[in-house]
Amino acid sequence: MTSDARTLLQVSGLRKTYRTGKAEFVAVDDLSFSVRAGGALGIVGESGSGKTTTARMLIGLERPDAGRILVQGEPLAATVRGKAARLARAKAVQIVFQDPYLSLDARISIGATIDGVLRLHGLTDRADRAARTKELLAQVGLGEREATALPRKLSGGQRQRAAIARALAVEPAVLVLDEAVSALDVSVQAQVLNLLSDIRRDTGIGLVFVSHDLAVVRYVCDEALVLYRGRTMEHRPVADLLTHPGHPYTQLLLASVPRPGWDPDSISRRRRELDPLPAAGAPGGRG
Ligand SMILES: Nc1ncnc2c1ncn2[C@@H]1O[C@H](COP(=O)(O)OP(=O)(O)OP(=O)(O)O)[C@@H](O)[C@H]1O
Image (cartoon, rainbow, N blue to C red):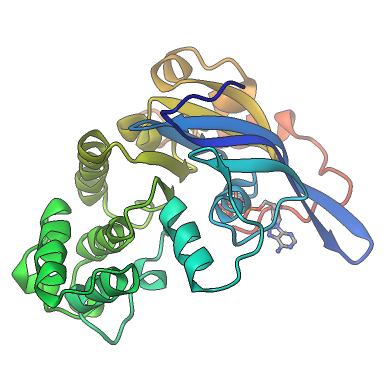
């Protein structure tokens, strides 16, 4: 894999094994991809395919057994000691989860949360922080009313916008979105997806969009990588993948999107045919 100045994220040969008792289970196996400035990669797969494990490795919450992660050419530190190292890692990769409460403090207003992040990252002047907070909230379509509100006073879509603003406050090179729109209504999903497309165009941030839903990935990503049992089945431009899915598993993922004429029974049957026996030691999906 080649690297150039505009490659923000380079992942090669990533592997993660979990041990439960004597059993060993490979959750992610030999995963490689890169994301350029302003690029967006979708990582798709069903529950248990290794998406969250991948996201957790990208933000340093999980340590890979093999492989490496380079952000702007620098290895993502396996362990961080001290404030400077912690802040540097935060600036490399930020994440937005399905549940925005994981990024937002339920006890303080959205504006105060963002102000705190800016202060932590060295913006000492109060007026500068206020201006930047306003700018960040405007970037995600939130205004003064939302800035002063507690997270629970906002709608689900507004909370997820606030979580995105909080992540952007760090000015990360890469933003990982782990099922970030899955809990939202379809119309709100579309708004947040449009917002993400605008953000990547305007800021040049690299996006890694993790989802079980190929239809959602299509809105934001140029490329998609299909994970199945931790392995890459295919990795191609998303339009190409949607029109000519190469692997039976990708075809099944596409067929699984509810639409008129949708046939869940046939999908379940095809899924069983594809994967008749659980792999040795596989704990199975969790959801
Ligand atoms: N801490 C852990 N210990 C043991 N096994 C784990 C652990 N975390 C994940 N796994 C297993 O690794 C596999 C991949 O899990 P992962 O959460 O990455 O998948 P996923 O594609 O994100 O699925 P979901 O959408 O359900 O979270 C699953 O079989 C899961 O049971």
